[in-house]
Image 1 (cartoon, rainbow, N blue to C red):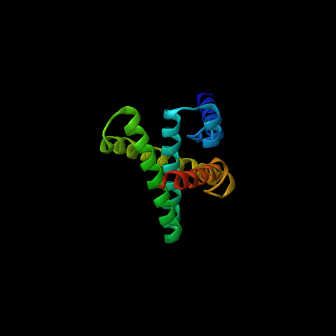
Image 2 (cartoon, rainbow, N blue to C red; image 1 turned 120 degrees about the vertical axis):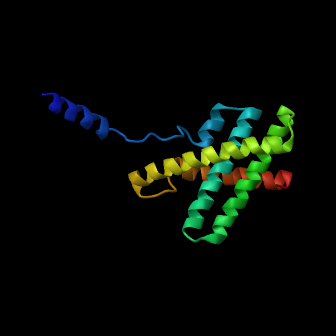
Image 3 (spheres, rainbow, N blue to C red; image 1 turned 135 degrees about the vertical axis):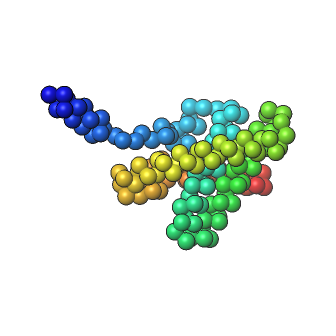
Amino acid sequence: MKKLLLIVVLGLLLSGNAYALNFKESIGEYEKKNAGVESQIYVMNRCSAVFLFASIKLFENNDLKKGKNFSDASGSMAKYATNILSKTRNIDFDSSFEEIFERTKILQRYYTEDSKELFLKNGKYFSGFILNDLGRCAQTLKVLKEQLGY
């Protein structure tokens, strides 16, 4: 009887989603609900991470030119986030960059984990909110380059 109960409980636990996505909303959805400087820093940091995620995937597939483009885009977003963080918190650029860099690494890892979950669901790493985030971040980067010269 105990074995049967254990099998039923384990079956119920394992039959549900083994993973939950790290990001509960796309960047666009986040922006609709949040405003201000901290929100801008978060969005730029997350854009840096999604671009970094894309560059790693492209490098893994030997698409070096596109991988470098996404890597450069990640750096541009990190630079923008670093500048805002440095100015709003009145801390030096290097300390701000270190904080942004650490956040980007964590967020990039979340994108990697979520892409694996999405791949299991639909066979694509670039899909769902990740694809939406890449599009939104590309638009944002274009505006930044035009207005600020990043």
